[in-house]
Image 1 (spheres, rainbow, N blue to C red):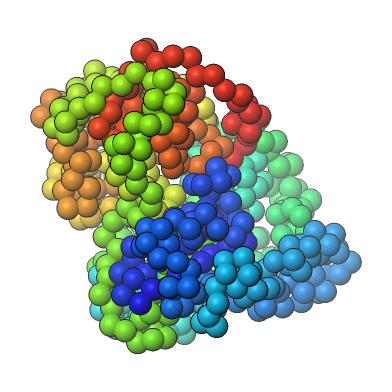
Image 2: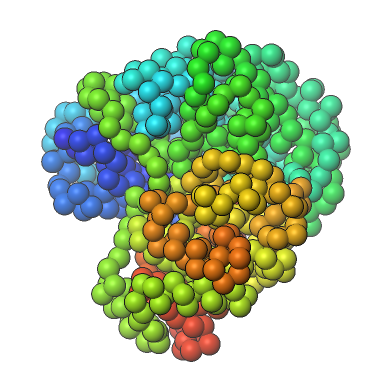
Length: 579
């Protein structure tokens, strides 16, 4: 049995394919279109999933969509009517895509995909989130919290998963939304909404929460984690902006101009919204624990990508175990609806645990060779062991490596398949990679990947963090691995086991034998404003456009100084557009 899950038309469109209860493919549309956070219908992602299985669309038994468009449209209409005439401009902006595409998804699936069956099902948005967390988790039963911007009406839900079943017993409804509150501050700080919230999280440790008391004017939080927002300060329910003049006056000035200098005030505002976000999430977790008495927690929704808050939940909440799958935002809804249909609707027993995220594209050595030869790129072909040794040696020398190996990761984090790697012992690496490779803000931190069995030697953490969704404190501050230690002495941690990714594990082991350090600096293989690389061509172009020293792509190792000039027309404005 094949079930195809689809998410689309908000941000991070994706497709996922389940075969007999196993997830065999999942990928975001942005990786193919090269449009970051692409919201369009995921034709390319669907084609990849079908090709992976070697099937046609009509071999799929059920197609599932991750939310209910008509209910969402109802919310849109009611909201704009409530705020009329202020919401009229936003209403006119939203209508064309709704009337052309969003309301007629069954027809899009039937006509555009050629799907001839009637088995097209729609799940509620937060049920898809809940399914994406619990149904692929290792737990037989668990409490569930979903938190995002907004689905149909819900912005957060509390629930329980037992066996195949999911029950959501409480919801917070639009316009009151922790996700939209965080996005409002993302907007106010001059960053891109639904794209750069992680920048606010990265900026927060540079500041102090001096504006925390002013936030109490904006949001009132209850002990159960529920909250009410003062909508006087927000325009997002009806307009084309997140905040308004009242918000500007409360926080002492207009919105930061994008690309302008980041000030101490900006860092203090980021610290303030991060603090209250963590407090709300802790109250939610404490309340859900009291209601359920369960030791396991599953989380999903875009706010579940806030790895700083997640780290606090693991340390300070009553839950013993927390599971968050790698694409916790809207892309993961494609996984959630597929498993919800298979396990909950059709009542097939659960048999799959998402232990790693390597579910995307993969290329043979011959396919990679053909691309390199198209660019007339000199390369050295190496056996597996020699490739690992050479790359480890170059890392130890202070070189920066593009690492393109195996199946691409699902979700927003590079986890050792489409990564840029460097030596974490060299403090200067943070500034070098931000400036010369990633072309991004200097305050942005980098993550460590550490051998799973060695994690407690370097971090105040003892467990697994395979998806880079938990922040942990380093054991000795900046002494041993300064390039991956954030300003507050923490790191966004990825642990790696041989089982999850044998080649990446072998590389870090080889680096440890050379340096004594079982850790590498790992950041996504892309430049600012572009998605993570997907194809060998993407990888080579990124290698040539940036300050990377070497590219390890399949069995081939390329040195930058040996490469011919890359002849292409580069859209520099798009390449360095704000993200």
